Every structure is written in structure tokens, then in C-alpha cells.
Length: 160
Image (tube, rainbow, N blue to C red; front, side):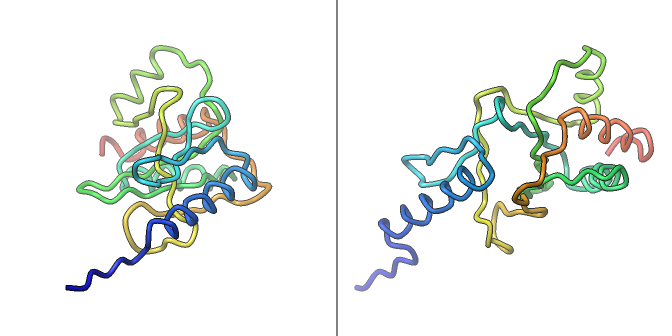
């Protein structure tokens, strides 16, 4: 019996290492390679951060950001329902009422030091992928800009 392997382990490790180098060297993001899965992961909290929300609501948030001339890299996570992850600058201090608003409108975040999976830049079809790819020499939007856009979008379209 013959077993076919799409990506031999050495090739997969090389691909992960190559992706890690791109994210680290080109975008200056703190990345790591998961030793078990070979996935390239982004460490949140110091250089970059992220906000997570349902796809439908996230599209409205992205629309608000674009109208205010912000562009965020966005990762789509398949599922039912699907999520979008907005990559931002590090979070800043917020009033308790703002955190409560984020919970009410179901906007999530990870704790500092946690990681998220980074998709391959050329993945356009399967699994976790980029909806809006990061651009070299482009600043990430401030955490507070995405928070404000989410709060504004929630007041326009109600609860998603």
C-alpha cells in the first residue's frame, strides 16, 4: 500500500520557517512556530493585538474603519458562525464601561501573551485565511479605532 503525503515533514517545516521569517522580518511581528503543528502563531499584547467578532458584524465594523481611512489586516476563521480577527496596535487602557460595551456586542480579545494562528499569505480558499492581508510599511490601526468602530457599528445596526 502506498501512502501519499502532500507535504513531507521537512518541507512543511521549511514552509513554516519561511512564513515565520516573512511575518517577523517584513512586518516586525512577534511570531513563533508551534513545535507540534508547525503553525506560525502571532504573540499578542506587546507589538500587536487583535479583536475578534462575528463575520456579519465585523463587515460593518470594517466599513466604519474604511470610511474613517483606517485599514486593518483581517483574518477569517471558518465556522458556524464565522469570525473575523482584526489585527491592531497594542491595546490601551479603557474605561470599564467600554469593556462592558465590547462584551455586550460580543467583541472578543485574547489575553496579553496569548497567540493566534497566522495564515499563509497565499492561502485564499481553505481554513484560516487573510481577508485583508497586511501591507508592508503600513501602520496597523490603533486598538481604540477598532473599538470605536465596533461601538459605532453596534449603535447603527443593533445587536448581531
